[in-house]
Image 1 (cartoon, rainbow over the protein chains, first blue to last red):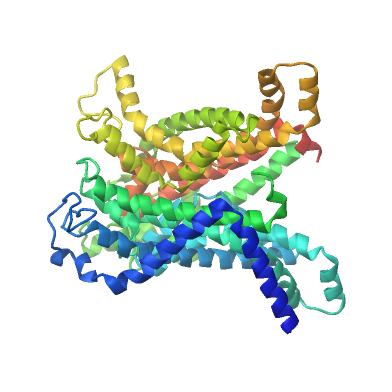
Image 2: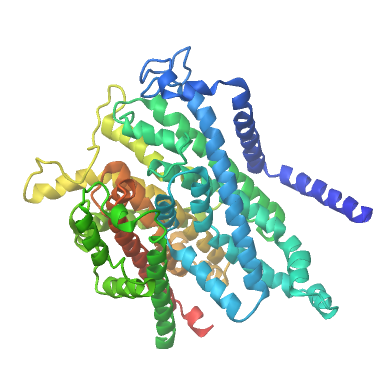
Length: 292
Length: 324
């Protein structure tokens, strides 16, 4: 057992060594560390009462000043404070919905790849259906029908974004199951459950990891788009801030301090996740190496 | 060939059937009384409500309601909007034109630009244009469509500082729109910013696809042969490599139509462009469930149809797939 632990530790060390050679991937990690730290530290160092419209202290729609480094919104709240607290909502929803999407995608992918015949055909039919449908439209309908709330948004994004993962995992499952040691395991009497969890899952896990990183990126964009289109989680996220800036005419009156910060945050975080995901793919998939 | 097309057609019909089934059950999840949910804000007496329930078929068993829903959808009857007090199908028909104009123009520009730049980038891969294109497509991928729309709106429609805005902020036409040929110019003026936003969403996709598919071709023997014949570099690219790389790209243009639809919903919302996307957004905001249900079905069916077309087209265009 300790043998396996040592091997695993060595594998992780090798992985990190290779990952470090990916420059853009390291930029991504750096941005993410900053973003996550900011989201975690915010409740410790700032006072959420500034988010309350009735207790806002600033002037309305004021440009950046010493007291309000990023200016204020339509009711005099600090944009900086809102961006900081918004990061918690945006990141949380991004992570949770990517997690949900990954779980559904992985389970469907492995099951569709493991069982041949009609179960696989039915599952792939459903997957293709989800793949083709405009997921944002479906997510909007789901959010509108189920009503607001963080869990609804997570559900709406997760349920509509797993199809790509499922296809990828199914293809990988097929190649893993064709390997001789899986056949050996089957001959020795391993059941479906054993093969799927002990052989297939560990082998597709790296792919799942890379894919999830990319899914978080799209989930954060989707969350902000849903919030902008009116399906928000009831808490201020970057997307709902932009909704506010649009509703209150910040765009047409030139209140750039209301429009730029939340958007730039979204772009930075999404770009960071995308860079990390691409770097992971390169490290984990030797075929991609050397090809840009 | 015919058999392939028929299989694809069958698949598409199945998918459309699944959309109808999903729509029916999804919109039964609405909490509370559907009759009240659908007529939100319209005061009704108990008698009217009872009549409405009977009209909507809510007093009948579920299977019967389902059958009724399917038959009516097949006839193109998508119900009535109580917000607009008009049939949903009529509303959708009205909004179809502006959406087709926006999406059509946007796609044409995005495809031309994306394929051209993608081919250039791949041909000189590692070069300046290539690195620029890769960076640009990565950035555009990370930028939410609606935010890009807001930025364009802020810079080009509202104006920055002393620079005045040069494009209208909203809609497809103003109340004082001129008549005759000038009207076209008037609409085109309104079209610029929404179109630009939509192009930015999808153009990066085409660029990336064209680039990678041309990169696949560059190493092929026939390209070397063409060079060995003494053809000029530009001619090798234009007459030999690009036509082959176009095959997978053309179908991907169709396959990404779902993305275009999503882009249209957000773009139309930002610019108040009076198309299907704005209708859908207004229905979500209402909420006007009848319109939401109708537009949802129409958008989904449109995407499925385009995808099926792409599949069949690929088969027609590429003999290699046919023999496989």
